[in-house]
Image 1 (cartoon, rainbow, N blue to C red):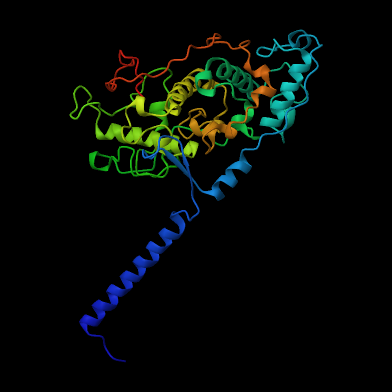
Image 2 (tube, rainbow, N blue to C red):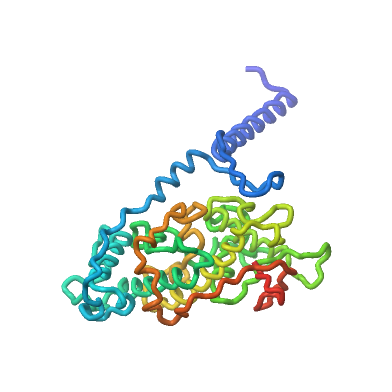
Length: 386
């Protein structure tokens, strides 16, 4: 067997490395890129790249996953009030007995089709009993649903929501989230990744901060300073850092992935900050951010002492909602099909306790200067920070 010279050995090594690189690169092309055809939908003026790109196979999968169940048969309006027939009816007492049973039947189909009524009502006990935590949570979720449909029409419009919007036939919605501890990392200044380079589904597997939801979608009505762009060439009063900007990018990627759209669904790429050049969907999204913060603060986080330990997250927090909880990858939940028209009982203000029962006045964002980070209120122009 002939011995290779140094040059031949070096050439052989280079070829092997090139071969490995070609295999890795080819695998990346094979499993990363989407293959034609791709459908482009123009959503704004020509020439400004306001368009959305969809893959037909992906659309077929999403369409199949967003079918709505047939509505329950209408209820006979001639019946006694539910609050007079049943005990401990705290939310739906403004319905008659038949309407009440119809909503309960629908909830069972939407939330616990396999477990049945006993998912919330303990077997062998009176229906009025609150011994199961699931009933306590379900009552609060009914209040939340009515609150959304009554007070958050700037976001949900007349389409509204029902239990099925999030649950889709499961006791626990598939797209709830918890505070994440992050991956283990070395301690100390040199070992602090600042939440980055830990790929997470919430951030679209990007190298951006892995948990964009805790700082932006909790905390009630407090402004989280999402908006970081300046309206001047040089920063004048806007001290947002690159690190802050990356947290915002992480949230935007989460919203994009949740709705199955790209940035230009809400923004005009020639001027991301300018509300006047953005599409109306940006205003809808702004209201959605405010709504999500409020729902987490008013309805879910107060249930900390109600959920058992096995239903809490790795850091002991309750499940919370985000954009993906309702949207599940499509620009409108259930592709905009309104189940609320078949269940107007869920759009009444009665039974909403601890939150305003009067519809909130729509607040439309107006063009204005960038938000100064740390400010608790929008700028004087009325421009929202987002």
